[in-house]
Image (cartoon, rainbow, N blue to C red):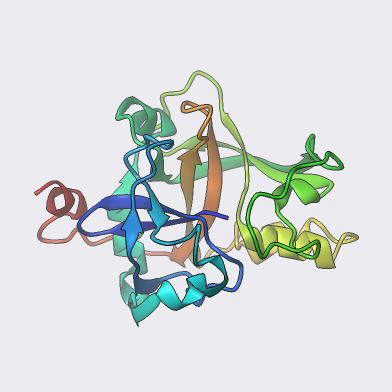
Length: 229
């Protein structure tokens, strides 16, 4: 599994491979040693150092140093958002945030379900499921806040919490949309999106970000400017 996040020094980051038992949670501030992988040329992609030789003890490499304050969630996410997925793609970035106007949410058959795949990492037993092991996949259709795409975006949702619910509640799939607070009047919804390794112009929803509704305050020095400098 991959983990997506934001660094004040590097900008958006993709960290892999990660285990399901890693000690981090959403909004945690963590420190971890990473290295580049020559096979993944996306600027945001980083490997956890030692992941090949120290897989069983990989969790010990994660240092949780704090938690981002809830009162600042909306400001952080809102200031990092782009107007459209097309803006992210044209900037040659593989990760970004957009504010959607969701048109539809639905499930479709998973085309990879039931196919055989070779196990490539030690320590992954038969009980470890990944997203291709589920019969359905959740998807959303939406327009961005400043959408420039000819047609609405239609993307798969990769958020792991969705798949945990699907596994435990196969007869109540639609509850995942309520769990994500998509219709909550007390929350603003943003999508954390990323492209695919093999298809750099094809994006998926990595996570649905729910932040308290209300006006956004701009920082004195924008997160983007801080990153560039």
